[in-house]
Image 1 (tube, helix red, strand yellow):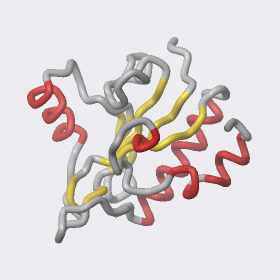
Image 2 (image 1 turned 90 degrees about the vertical axis):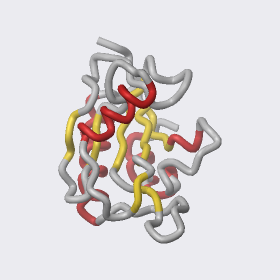
Image 3 (image 1 turned 30 degrees about the horizontal axis):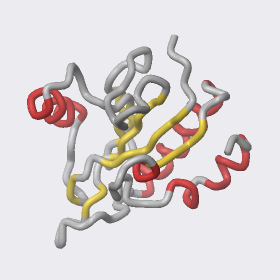
Image 4 (image 1 turned 120 degrees about the vertical axis):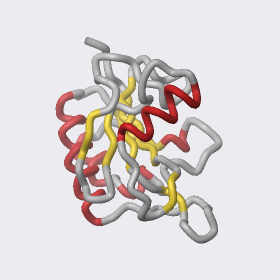
Length: 144
């Protein structure tokens, strides 16, 4: 099993309200980028459903240089549907599911810390501040 030291949050960079499936993202990553599979380990749909992407046993393809020891989670959305600018478009169901998934993963991987993609790349992704949003989780696990 891989040693996991980071859990990294992303968005799909799709317009608010646009249903996007794990198959859609897999196609973008495989056909569009030539990767072997979807880059994320989990995808959180607008309705809060959590769908597995790339198996956790395999390194992801979601943050250059950090894939070997991280888990990538993306929520569907992250872009304003009018101006196509970064926007936190998470629904209440997505927020709830993300919180539960993060808590479970941090219990399963006690050495992991929680981050947003924007901490490692010049991107807006995941279109919100992870440290602020999940400060209670980070404090609970006291890992940073």
